[in-house]
Length: 194
Picture 1 (tube, helix red, strand yellow):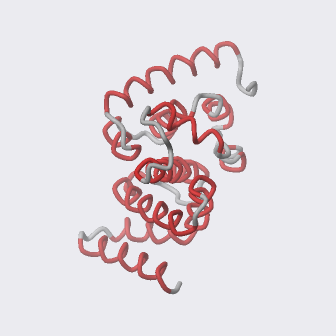
Picture 2 (cartoon, rainbow, N blue to C red):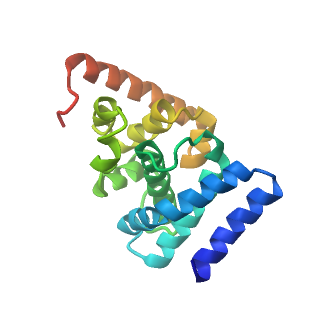
């Protein structure tokens, strides 16, 4: 690793070494090595700018540091899905800060992500999550993000609010709506219908 990437990685190692979290340091190193390319790619899809994509990836790494203890296998598809959600939302927040989108409504901001691809099929096609994630992928982006972070990854509403930069109450409302839609779709057998 060279240049700025090496500096970012060194900073991550220093932070975890300082706080004495060697296991977390190892996980963050693995996440960085395995998924940084994916993070840049996803951010560039939304931001259309390499420098901004690198900023989004760095901010996403900071968010991942806060929840790294909840991550099991860093190479599994569940972790990739988590990273995709965090990077997509971070990139959208950067667009919002730069006033490159001309609205303030959270739901409209989330709809912008629908122009970028869904969580890649190769991420959800293994790990035994196929049915539930195929239904989750049918949800609106706003509901899909909180559903994956809560139902699949087990994060609390306050953690989700911090990652997505939205109010805790908004997270709980979206999660309730997502659960209702998921229950309805699963009862009807809409697993693969769009």
